[in-house]
Amino acid sequence: MARVTLITGGARSGKSRLAERLAAAYGPPLGYLATGSPGDDEMAERIARHQARRCGDWHTIEEPLRLAEALQDHDGRFNAMLVDCVTLWLTNHLLAGSDPATILEEARRVAALFPRLQTPLLLVSSEVGMGIVPENRLAREFRDLAGEANEIFADAADEVYVTISGLPLKLKG
Image (cartoon, rainbow, N blue to C red; front, side):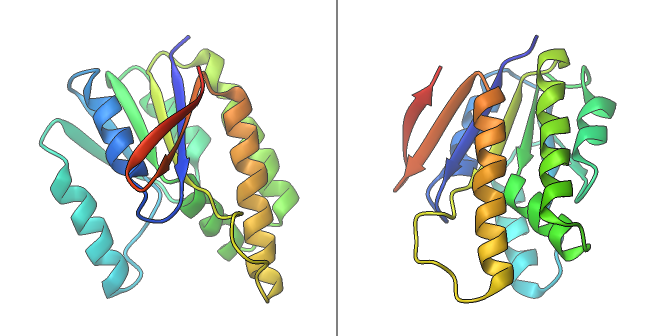
């Protein structure tokens, strides 16, 4: 069984940088499973910044929806795999019309893979539940969905970190 690490935190808290550093310790080749897609100029710029931080040791796999299948398909090909990020994956499912119960079932299916993985896995996920209650239904649904999915992954992970202001705090493992 490979080690599974969940890294959560707020926006611009250092989650991805921590995940990249921890994954890089396994040595190349490294897999980067990207769930985001450049739907507009601002998102394309964000993706470019993330790509610029990574050296040639990283191989990018773009998969916005089929996370379980992508993990299975690429298991054993890398010394570590990083998923960035779970919350974008959840967003993609919501925007594709999936209902929250179905999405959470898919999160459970992904978590059920953890004990069978050969490749160490690092998951990045935003912590979105520490602010005010959103004013619209979709935003509240997303906040609740992200919190529940983070619980599923944190329970199944070997290690869990939260990052705040660029500083990691180990919560589990």
